Image (cartoon, rainbow, N blue to C red; front, side, top):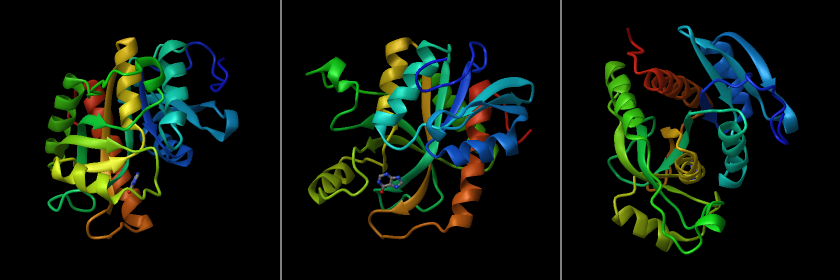
Length: 239
Ligand code: HPA
C-alpha cells in the first residue's frame, strides 16, 4: 500500500493503462478485461487489474492534470513495479488538418512546467514517447483501419487557458493538440526507465470550436483502449 494506492504488492500489473477519469477506468475494465477486480479506491480513484488475451493489465485513473498524474505514475512505477504506462485520453486539436475523433500518438509533449520541473530545475527537458510503444501503436491503429497523427502535443497546466498568443505560437510550431498529462507521464517514466505513450482522441477543436457529444466520446474512447492494449503487447488488435 502507498499513500494513494490501496493495493497489495503484486496487485498491479507491469502494464498500466491510464485514463484521466476514474469512471472510464471502470468502464474500460468491465469492457476489455477478463476477471477484472478493483485494486484501488483511495480518494475515489479507481484501479482494476485483470487480463487481456491472457496478459495481465491494470487500468488505473490518473486524475486531471500533471500534478495528479504524477502522484499515481510515481507510485505505480516505484512502489508497484509498473513498466509500461499508456495514457488514454482526450485532447483539443490545434491544427486545421486534425479533425474531431482523430487519433493522435504523442511523440513529444511540450509544457511550460511539470511537477518534475522541481527536480530538473533549469533544464529544458524534452519528454518523448517510448519508440517501441509508439511504433507498435501505429501498427495496431493501422490494422484497425485508423490513421493516427504522430507528432508533438502540448501538456497544459490550465484547462481554462487565457494565453491565445501561446496557442498561436504552438500552432505555428506544428503542435497537434493540447491535453494536460502526457509531459509529466513521459518525464516520470524516463526517470525510472519505464516505457510510456499517450494515445489521444480529439474531443474538441481549438480552431473551429467543434466538440464531440457524449456518445461519440464513448466510442472513440473504446478505440483508444484497443490501440493501447495492442501496442502494449505488440499484437494486432483486429486479429
Ligand atoms: N485543453 C486542455 N485539455 C484538453 C482539452 C483542451 O482544450 N481538450 C481535451 N483535453
